[in-house]
Image (cartoon, rainbow, N blue to C red; front, side, top):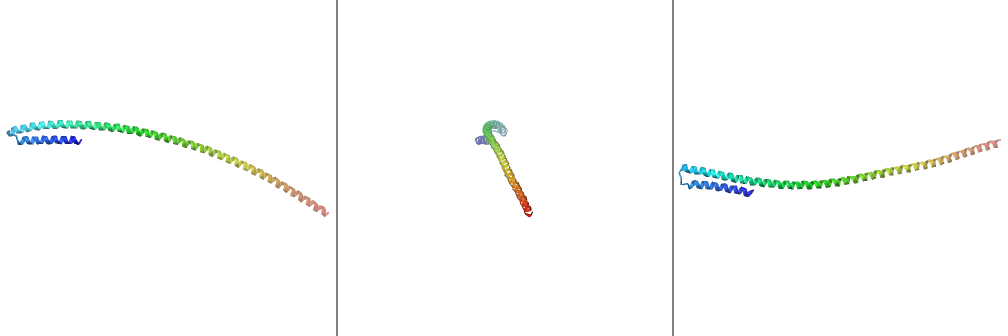
Amino acid sequence: MPNTRNNILAFLSGAAIRAGLGLLYAPEKGEKTRKLIGEEADKTKDKVKKQWDKTSDELNKSARKTIAELEKKMDHTVLVAGDKAEGIITSLQKKLNELREQSHKLHEEGDAAIEKAEDEIKKGAEKAKEATGKSEQKVDKNIDKAQEGLEKTKDKIKSSKK
């Protein structure tokens, strides 16, 4: 692009210098000189227009080529990013499934521990009931024995008083 700009400036400068020199060295009369200047100006205008169109076409081609290259690179980048995103999503899904499995195992282990604790508590309660029942029976027997002994003692006292 800098070369194109330099070419245009060089061309326009050359055309202006030629027109100026043509005026300075024109051996013709004013009317004829004006006509020649007009013709030269038209020629220069046509040359500038042709050069402008050529440069514009080159710039358009260059811009289209650059845009095509950028689109190709962007498509590649999007494709690569898409592949990486799919890989990340797949990895995250695997981790999520692993966490779900671990959570399920922990729930099962927790449920089993609760059941075991409940069983132990029931066994302990039954043993406590048995122990309490035996103790109550012993106490009741001891009370019965004590009452019998008391009755015997009372009877002995009564019989000794007689």
